[in-house]
Length: 571
Image 1: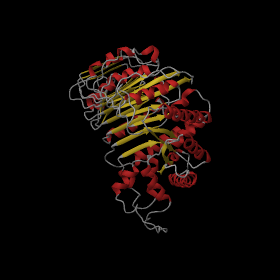
Image 2: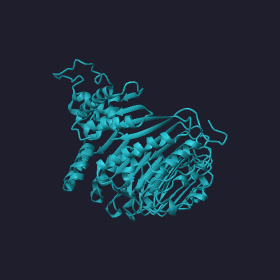
Image 3: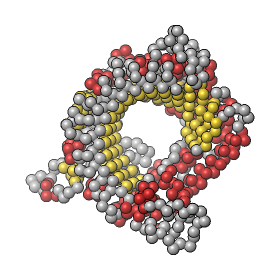
Image 4: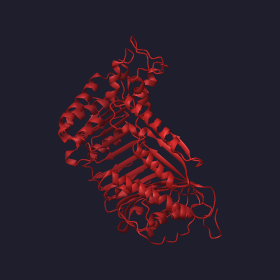
């Protein structure tokens, strides 16, 4: 509710989530399957062992098993052919071929001398699987590995296979083992001739240098660290009538992009860190979402009436002042807007922000230094009369906490704002000022999410120092908000810990938050982040999760203070 001066003084308690994470789960459905296989919880045809437990896997249809197997890297799916006669040829019917080797890339990261042998091993594995595969169609074909242009003959062959098999979703991610984009001269070049039909007779005479790309079944194309020129891109767009999603990351030799003709089915377009791009012209088709990240360019968006989601970040020096002029023709129908502002003092004239009449979600990624005030960015939110979600993400350079008075919060009602997300909350006065601005002006506010993990970008040199910085920021957040919250506006805090292993340090963190956050109402423990650890088998991963779940429950239940009223949830 509001006082006579228009400020919020009461209402339902807001949920403030103090987020913490140590990892995330990967393919839980597939992990369950393979943990059961590892423990013999299924019926092996002619086998000597039979479990006394319910044999639910053998009761599954082949279609269900294939869906589960599709979440696995192909080398793990192929291994199932040794389980029984039923499984022997099951993987042949997979329509998703996912070639990646996370363990191999991790080994290369630790020892660069393994790069050559591991690459050869990976290529042999892919070629072996493709020679054995005999299904008629491949819906999803994915290559994720550290490969450069020197392996072009093999990669060309893989693409020809995928196109011949009527691929729908094609992903080629050839970034190095550290997930860094390659220089253009090192990248693999996308072939200039690629078709589902025989086209040899078309280029033997009079010249063999023209480009022809025909992939009529293609719906989604994702390329990372793969070179492409203008002619190749135009061929893909012209001869892939079903193409709906196109993502180009780190693509070299592509300086001019023009996408536009009636009847084009493309709905989602991403151009990310393509250093050669200087001009993008999009017009006259039903584009729904567009992402551009890279140097400042000439960007023209014209007659795109279906465009709802726009994510723009131009240049290391920041968002260019002309960005609102560039996106001006789309402002009347955009609903989600994300802006990267790396150097806000030099790059953006906030006084020139036009009205954004239909924006419901606004995300600002901001370069933050020292104790620079963040309230100036609220002018972008104030230009969005229908705003429902406001998200801020700070990329830290050198945060400093200074003692100073909190600047008076400007009065600008946000009648529809329900959720505020703040990643990189460091506990500066400027951070608190921004949160208080939202609290005082958002009448319908339901939830504030504060994630202090962004503060670890401030140049700390060790993991221990980074964790300590996050804990300090979390403590600042709880104390600052509790004493600064307007009268009658209650706050309920929730701690979410992903990857809790049941270690003493995990328990210490939880008890620290319990002791210092009086308004804490809920603790959510998710041990599934453990699956990113270097466990040897998927069954071992599942066992680790079960052990962590047991430890968490035992330790927390005996440590929970009586009468506190805390809700404990263990996933």
